[in-house]
Length: 609
Ligand code: F6R
Image (cartoon, rainbow, N blue to C red; front, top):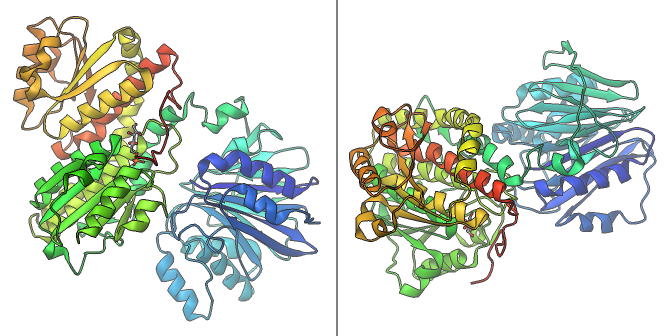
């Protein structure tokens, strides 16, 4: 998400910070800032918007210190603004942060009660206050950092400066990446190596719970209890360009592999496993208006529309509220029937898709309730809906959407559970079961992704086919559509997705040995029917790639290729069946040599009708 860079050494810290921030801009770019020593005090400069705005602000300025920290922000808590930009400085402490502090609200209340004044809407500011509060109580800087981190719950990568310690940069990591770059008499911190690859290739990769105090003598590493740690530096051989993609050949592949973390980040803080509760703080109809909802409309475009189809299925099954799906560009032209009993859920990664935005306006104009599920904080759609459930997938750079899709499904699952429980359709015991199932999903996604090599081999075999058909039933039908869309948009191969039961009504005429049929066939209540469809394809000499659960001898005996995913509750199977289809499309496109991250004719966000 956000990008962090820090420097301690003889060169101009400002120049190194700005260079690093430019290299990290792909991680997010709604605001940026730096903190630098000048005449013993810490000076902070921050600006909303692109880095050029910060550069304008800094023009002509000089700082005489040797240490600095910088940040480029992709907002999660608190909308993009100058005040919410990092670094956050209070008293003697300046902090840059990537991650989410889960218990920031109670900590903030505690600190406010001690008379501390907050100037931003971020979770990060509590860290600066906490450390400074310990300093004021006479605790030395290093101890104050550890004391503060021991009070914090959540994820963080941190860079910290302290007035009175002009030769120290402190860094800490928990669940958000942070590295220390080792130069000749100079040291760097960065959330990603490309920020400083021009200066060093030797890095210490901090591990969860590590704290580093970097001085001209080098970094000293400790854990949260103060025990000193030794971490071997590693030399990396990536080119700066590759490293921006974290060693992956394309952003799309990186983002495919980021999906377990994206789902974790989307459900984090919104569930309680023991009580079996879903907490959707930004869902505006928790206490008032929920009983009025008689119908849910899910509206979106492209991949987000496929998430909407899954969402409608989940909503009806789990909450028994009638749910309908429409494509953004169709919805507003059909004069839809909307009243105060209608909840319109707009789903969008970017929050800027013109047709989805227009649909939300149409719903509002007609008096409906509006909610968005969105990945970009402060985007247009989030501003025009009454409530937002943010997906926390991090910036998606590859044009073909991957991690946004699975995060949207996670948000929709939470929404359906929340509605179902509020309407007493599901019991608390059932709720616990569903939540438990959802919590296990990221680990199982990782297992599926470990099988990427097998899918790459399969892709090599199928790279020369010109047409593909994708079939699925029930909740797997949208996954078939998504598999087909991924293949066509990045490989330029013609691919169609169909509900498997519809095959007999037309597409069956296309089947021959030149058109592979990808069948999504997890074990659910449609399984027997899908087996029947497989037989129908086989009887016409079709080639079948089946996506099945665990080892499935029934399917293995009938088809040409089987890709297996672990067995989960049928409503959760889309999280796993999606992944091999993304990988299959990716590897086929890669073998064909297409421009995977920026396929021809496509744009990442479609802001025109
Ligand atoms: C496909 C893809 C597009 C988007 C669509 C909607 O891989 O990325 O189909 O899903 O343009 O975009 P958002 O979700 O930003 O509204």
